[in-house]
Image (cartoon, rainbow, N blue to C red; front, side, top):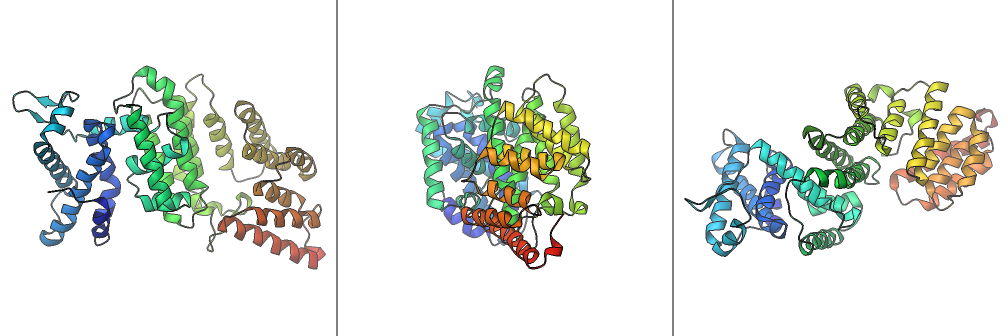
Length: 432
């Protein structure tokens, strides 16, 4: 009997709240174990087996009620379906048997190890496979969402603000590239970790940013992207050989940023800028965790961009405006730009410069950047010119509005334009 496709399986998931939750948490774990067992060229078989397992759950649990331990039930059924598949496909079983260390010569039966340790080891191996430099960074993020986080094609398309056909083709090309390059899903050696950990961290960084700075209107999806990036980062921290200072620094950065997640968006979906955020909505527990991981990151001699960004994010959790705060942030941006220049970091440095030395100095520095094609550049100049030259501020905000495609950014910029227009009508309201 052919395995049921995932497309049919998703239809049944909607009928039950528990199954989608378990799908999010357990699908990726079982797929990682089976993919490690079968090899990269047979990922689809692993996905089909696990999808069929969840379809069985949706059918049987509706008829017979929930089992005592739903997760254990899924693991047992997944094991049995895997063994049944291997019995029906002798050639496939013989082909992978030579590569698998979990084979008993007495019974010629492959052991499906779904212990916590093997699940974690398999996910770590899959993480280094997905983040192989032979595929593009955008595809790495997509594969991470799909294989490591259990996101479906529609969800990934929503995150990237594109259609599902584009995402499907991107993932298929990436998987095919891994096959042709004969990439194996095996635990990374110490040498491979040292060589490829920066690439893994870069993928997790992009995955987190996809949620935190996403233009998507789906608030739940944005938050899930950030949480998944943090979960995968924590897998690195939990493993002794990947528990490096840079991994701790990145997790610290994620904690600090996530602590302000609830305060960043207004009721209409508009972005609430830092100065206007309600500090009572900041998550103090995440701030404390960020401080913990930042201290752990300081135990090595390496200084990565994640260390500097985490330190900047730490200062942003101190709401009170002080010279010490903005001087520290400014110096950290100076070091960050020396390590890795980016236009966004340069713009953020200019904002810190304005806070430390005033808008006039910052305007001069900002205009030297000449990033006229970026809406962020014009938004920053609109902010800096407000109260200095409101006509120029309006022009920059209007240019920013024309350059952005994000509904959230349009709401925020429109709000600023409306505020400036009111000030033009009533000069007494101009900010001094």
